[in-house]
Image (cartoon, rainbow, N blue to C red):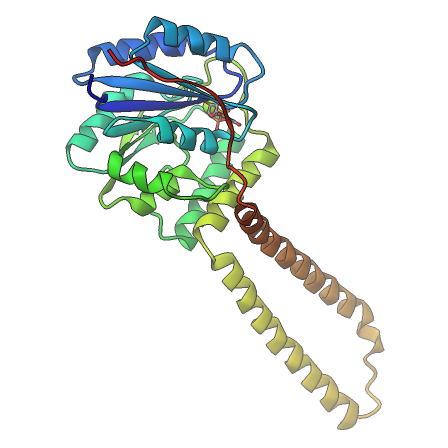
Length: 315
Ligand code: UDP
Ligand code: MG
């Protein structure tokens, strides 16, 4: 049997409450699709019954379902990466397991791929997330837009489709901390975005704590821009010039107008000093974000360990 035309890659982390309905809805979409398709589930170290459910799905549609099981949790983007490595389709679609991305929108993405786009992002209309998430997203979207050359309206939507060419390039990357929509954008020639529906999480809670969310966004910024480092260089030059000016003024007052006392300004000086020290600590932290990510790559450990694979049965 030939390889399927489409692979749908779905990362799964403790989603037992969502999987049955997801599989039902995905199955219905696959059955009405105008081309052959498979689903690649990647179990990202779930501690609930997700793996058992996924194995049942494989048993019920053996030719259409692949299951990749990690030994532990490596994060959504690594799970999607592993899914890409196992996907056989010419077009690869990603979506979340919590049904926030309706599988019924897949044909719309495929339509844009057919129209000649090699990377198609979903643009969530009426996004069903908390006010905090939407606001934070907007801020990061803004920041990404101003310090990288990546242009998209909705970077966070994981309902997306890519051509084989783009996915081969993505899979050839060895970074550990990455942001797949941005990475794929870098390798595409003719990207597009289409409006897609967005639903509230069907069951369970988001797998992203505030800390994980912050880390993911740092992955996006450090992975695709050196502007934060350049900003610090600029800031350093600026503050050095300011300090030099201050030294000049103090020198002038001490030797040309002797008798002028500067001791009164000691707390002002402290305030300025504290501010500059904070900026310095921030700079060291920022460099640390880059260095830590370099360190992970330099160690050359495997990005993830696959414990088990259930490959689709070839008829
Ligand atoms: N996910 C994962 N590994 C993780 C965190 C999340 O595979 O460490 C999966 C999760 O099961 C879901 C998708 O990534 O299919 C998106 O996660 P979630 O819905 O929690 O993120 P949010 O919608 O809150 O951004
Ligand atoms: Mg979600």
